Amino acid sequence: WVQGVITAWTHFAQLYTSQMWYFSGGIRGTGAAPALSVFRAGWVGLRYHLGSLIGGGLKLVIAMPFRLTLGWILAATHNEYNPVGYMVGGCCDSCLTCYKRAFMLMNRNAYMDVSLQATPFDQAAEHVKNILAMEHEASALALLNGATWLFQLV
Image (cartoon, one colour):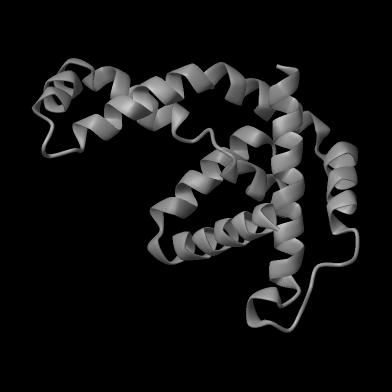
């Protein structure tokens, strides 16, 4: 559980720093994140969003075995060259429906919404699901995910 909270805090700090860079004009090459922005992001996470980080970290740790197992089964059912995947998908259809409704929401993208709008983890996960359903908004989310990956690399 503690590892889940620490992971949630680091994801939040990375996403918050990426958002500071993105909204200061970083994507256009005209801005940059403030100096020591990672430390500021860590402080903001601890000061203002600790409850969401603890709740989200706990939920992600509890859901991880289900997400990994059912995510693997769902990926196998979408492979057209895997007849066993079709059979398993037919047998586990209700489990896969539950996975799509509940566990697919629980990912680190929810922390992006927590930092942007200061919403609780559950509301943020639902909002991210709705954003991903909209085509034009999903591209902005993908862009922020790419910026976060870049900050992780550096």
